[in-house]
Image (cartoon, rainbow, N blue to C red; front, side):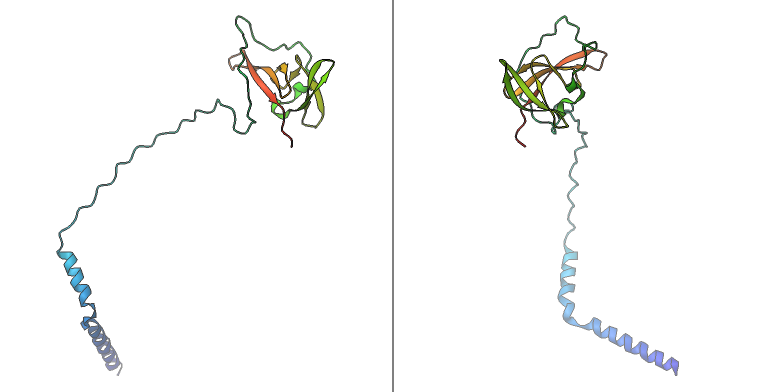
Amino acid sequence: MKILKHALLAAVITSTLAACGMGGEHADLRVYVDEIKRRPAGSIDPLPAFRPYEAFIYSAAALRSPFDLPIDVERRVYANSNVDVKPDFSREKEFLEGFDLTSLRMVGTIRKAGTLWALVRDVSGRIHMVTDGHFLGKNHGKVIETVDSQIELIEIVSDGLDGWVERPSVLALAEKE
């Protein structure tokens, strides 16, 4: 009896599959596929030529950091000819030489006894008066000229070869915070 049921089930499945395949509803698809197969084979375009990778060389390392405030430095000639540039280690350091120049802010000026004094704020918020000849910053920065809007300095920095170089710098008047 089991064999008869299995045989009957196989016959029903076979006839159902045969009926599905005889339908003419896919005739247009068969015609289209046959037409495509009769066409001549096309050619595939070659791959585009790729340029080899060129390594990027960062050449702005010696420029001003984009995170520092912009500085307007007037062109001045600081002559060093035939002079050994080096800081005076024998002189007593001034208070503002204990701070980085970037941490100091010029907040104003005051004229006292005919001399223009710049008002400089340190990181703790204390205000100090400086004028020409005073020193600021950790790079032996000497104040060359004090004007209403900025303090011009000459810093003495190491050249990396056991020597020293003079570098002009400016501490500009800070904008209102």
